[in-house]
Image (cartoon, rainbow, N blue to C red; front, side, top):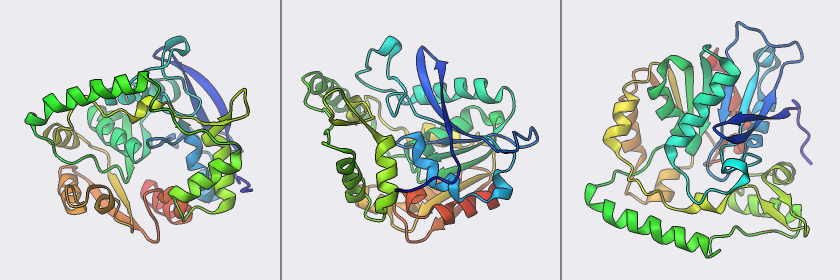
Length: 311
């Protein structure tokens, strides 16, 4: 089993009528007020603990005096999905940005933070940094590519699909697979990511799922996350927000081309790089021998990149 180098503690914060679960890594020497908090936000169907391997790979010199904060997004991990435990039946992207703003109110006050986001979390981080530019000192986007461009004529079909999928959810047809034991969860993680070692998969599985009353290991993610958004992805709006980002930005990609796998020519890395030109101070870095879960595949490479960028 993987043994973490830096232990974290968990706490729950009341955010927008939710009990938000937040994982915090604190320096043994205490927080240095001169260092901005480092905030890590995870991707779709993931949890805050996913960053453990990268946090462990940070140098002692960088981590000393620095507080690292990672929330479980609403409906993921140990964070609830609705007020008083009532589960949500769909999710709106803007809610993640609002949740993040409330979380920064709690943990940072008016102090700017360094923000790292992976995948969906990277997309949230990019938009948030343009909406609240004064709150971000430096920004790191890990494979938060955005989505292919949409057209207005797609809207009627998109709304209809959203309604149909809501009905599918309420019929219980989108339920996530349960596993007999934590080893089954670990095998699932390794199947999805062949680069993930058995020791890391075993550790992560215990944070990615929990046993229910019957002993079945349930994934800590609401099935409602599988529902297609009712709203189209509007590239023109995203680019306007990108133009408002003032923080120096590091866009990190894996050497495996995730976009080529996902979209098969409908949206490419070249198009993504064109979008990044709208960010005033953006640079691109590539993690070698890594796929989309690059913080699992090459945590040492990633930690070195982040340390060098954040300073």
